[in-house]
Length: 409
Image 1 (tube, one colour):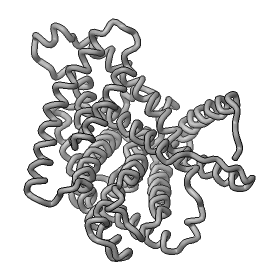
Image 2 (cartoon, helix red, strand yellow; image 1 turned 135 degrees about the horizontal axis):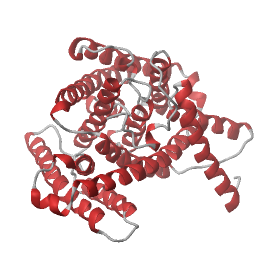
Image 3 (cartoon, one colour; image 1 turned 45 degrees about the horizontal axis):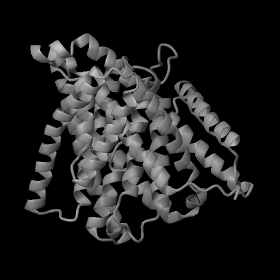
Image 4 (cartoon, one colour; image 1 turned 180 degrees about the vertical axis):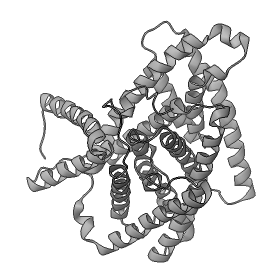
């Protein structure tokens, strides 16, 4: 096994960060998502390593840890992006039902495909279909800068709702007791408890941010958010609701009308906290996303492209996702199909949830190459839509994850 010394590791790590930053700038010109460039870079490094017989091993647990932390950062970033208000009711309604209905129809259709082709139990096929039906906000949100304001707004809300809905449903179906009235009642109760905790813990975290005199406090907040997420998993609570609630509270503080609260937390103070928290969150998300997709790409062996079953099953699944999205947008949202219908990428959340499937629910005949094929193909389809979208950005600015992104909402 090839061993690197400390200086070589530092050089390699920092070079990868610089490479990711360059990908983010290049992606604005060629309209290829920077995440897809990172994936291809990881695959390229794997090809070079195999070519020169360099044995580099990364623990699957390391990739999973990066994915979970990245998931928390993405959800928090989504909460900091979502603006509430009466003028947003229509887009919130349309994007929510778009995310919900497309997710439900995709899950049902993919469950049928997996059950028919692999001849596996329906409940196991359902658990696999759920992650594959979640639109990846980690790919969508950084890639929509060339779109019009209305299209960007709709896709930001839709991708965020898709993440939350998919994760909540996945956690329900991997529980020991499911599909019973008792489990449904417990599930509803857990969501209610999470909403109440979201309000209480959001105010607590916000108080820490606003009143702590120490300069080092933002990563304390991130550590507390990770603790909340992990504790919520232990107690079977949808803790991501708490995280997105915290982001929503800070981003929509101008809706607060209680004089006693505003006396302690004036709008000007909250606005400064929001800008700094959004910046730190975006930078952290960028860093985690960089190493996650590079490592995931490095774990992909292109040998799966030679297996006909992987290409056939993966193509059926991608076609099902594409058709469901086109039909819903055309007949229910009644919006312009281009390029929204091309936004079917699967990414970080899909991968993380696949790692979390319990052993007793795993499909014996499922080839992981199908997952790799779907992630690459759906990202390429989105890229094609972006390349042929005619509207051009007015000027070169940093990609979404680096900036405050006032142009999105």
